[in-house]
Image 1 (tube, helix red, strand yellow):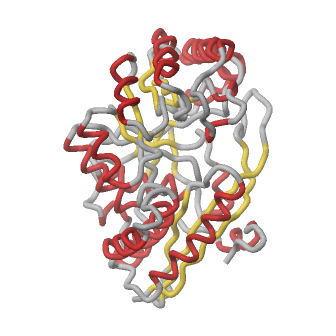
Image 2: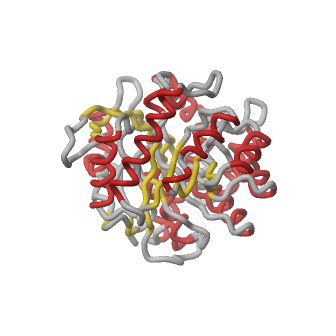
Image 3: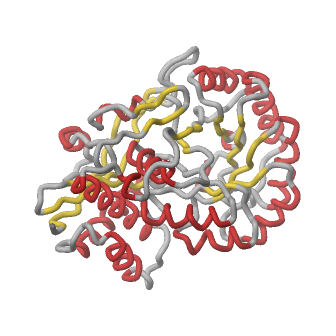
Length: 392
């Protein structure tokens, strides 16, 4: 069997941050970037890349995947490790993180999908089999902007059966959002609002639900420390990405001074960037993104590294169904697992472009035993919703 085509699909799909409940719905659209790998045996695999912030990022990645994909035409799709290293090493001089590993991730996931379909096995079986029968999930609500709406959203999440969720109580006070860092500070009013929102959420859900805080790497060391200490009364399980990822020293300073556990990893790429995190004891949880860090192959390697340090894996998700299910296959297999992230508690927005809904019950994902990823992308939907010039 040989690879005959690698095709990126940039689509715009309907999206609703709040699919039901007591608050007004919030219908909008979102971009998704899928990658289709075809073979001369008629077996097709699918991968995905978590969209990058801003319009240019996704369009640039679409073009990048087309160029990178040309390097694997004619290769045997079962040579997954060889193809991974071929692409990774070829990009050394332009940088082997970010766009490079995102493209590799999508192709790698698609190759595992092809391999599973060829052998008639789900991917987790090919990784060594299951160590659990379901995948615990945590999700997050729409961006909380005030205590009242935040509490209502929190109650809906708990009512859906989820036992943990994550939120960022700071972002609404940072007008540039989570892709902007200048001085790493927050206004006094923004700090007080974050405390009020967190207090309202804890009161709404009670003591049993695990609450996770995401700081989106937005703060300098003293600000991150102060914010984490202000939130101590609310029993926060982890404080995620307190400061930008470039400085391990900054992360250590924060970790040494705050009461919460630290989680990092969505902005780290490949096993090599996780080694110092583990060796220097800089995080209590790691959260690589399977569509950014190097695909299923690399996520499994990172998980194995973390297992040696007894650090739990909790893969990041901010994209579509392949992001969720590819991470879930690895989590079915590795013992050191906390929970898998999903965008929302209700993932019905995915249904129009996959052949059957993800099986989520009471906050747990049940992974299909169908071959490969266990789902198929609706090609007709891709064609109908591809951005002009960015389809197959």
